[in-house]
Image (cartoon, rainbow, N blue to C red; front, side, top):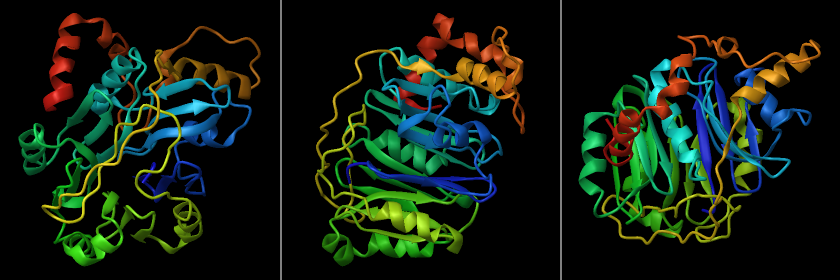
Length: 329
């Protein structure tokens, strides 16, 4: 699987991508700033390729890393509320090293997990999942985490193992993971996403480039179109800082992770939040643009805390964040 991500959002929103095509939900279900980056060719950071798109369970929020049509790499963390201040700070810190997040996933209780080439960041994971990740760090690193309703989860590791607790809320996924014969035929499970808003809904991509899902019918055309472009494990992917992707044959499987072929970025990424304010003013026809005002980024469900902009300048915060990359909260 060269590249795959499926993100569920509130209000029946979704985003799906392969390394050549992507699609998202209609009917204004995406946060408006995210939709404009994806759709509007006049946006100052119009999307060329999305590295990472994810939506918390609260409406109006998102995080994103992408390459613009001007071939610049950007990240957007200002549309995360105060409950995700840790993730926002993590995104700013890794951007200084030319890295961006990948396969970010959000779940209940303001939980999240994200992957970068140099480490991980997470918070509020189900205790069993967090214990499993920490316990396996020396043997195999997570390549994909899925968070579902009522503490359900799946985690795929680079050494081919998978840990999961989905039987009660996603029985089809439980059966798929345990079906070693089918997994062998389809070259293992390469990616999985659980809908944290609706039990039973999921998206699974396999190592041979095929996919299975249980999703609302109105998503079918877009999901089918993108899924047809998935590439088998080991295929060349869009140049980015993605880490090697692992895949699992079944619980306790021993498949090997795919190799990484994309070069690193090598330079710091750009934060897009300030430029969004410029774009917003232009769209409103206000002519000259005033200085950046963080208060314009207030969001439903709690709002953005401007004080978090300064967190990266606090040495004690940076030290704590270094520990967080390895061990979470």
